[in-house]
Length: 254
Image 1: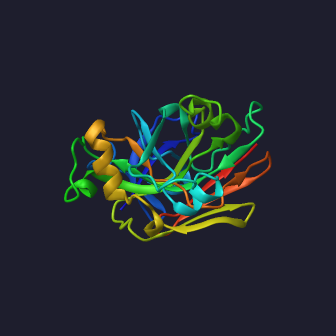
Image 2: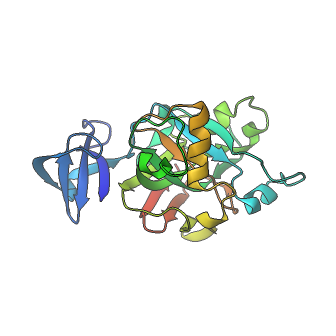
């Protein structure tokens, strides 16, 4: 199923609702993955919102070897455990929504990723039950002020500024994350093209690791890392993140 979070009317004015996308129609549900209410809307009537309502966005950095190399971070051994950083709910941006290039960075980068949204409270997950905690999968864009990443103590400005995490277009509930293609295009030119099978730490390992330390709540988002090919963005660019089987996340930079 494709789970969508949406508003009727503009993203700014309408109240957020959840539903199931079936072709050209949206069946309204009682929350994420909840029972249908019986109300049906035409998809053309709704504006898609980021398909998550997180208390936190947990991100994995340096999870693809070639990305580690391209940033010059391959002088030692491979990471022995996932490198984790956080974004807040303020960082979410809706699919198709524009993001203003900040005037306080001179090196604004894209990082396309596989993202997942948690569906149930999760603590001390095991390899056997980790994926059962996932409500669905989607496309994520980890926007980064690369120059400030070098000076921030916790990458706060570099990674967690407003609208630095576009997400969408929907959650796919039936999905195998082990070996799918992840692409990022800027102005229709392919800039990133990798596969999740190239991850140093696959999705199950990430979830098991995270929940040793942090309780993941329903609606929380996990970004799983980006392939090589990251680069700068400028006003007027359009970024597309496509994860095989999950649709395309479109983000204009203004």
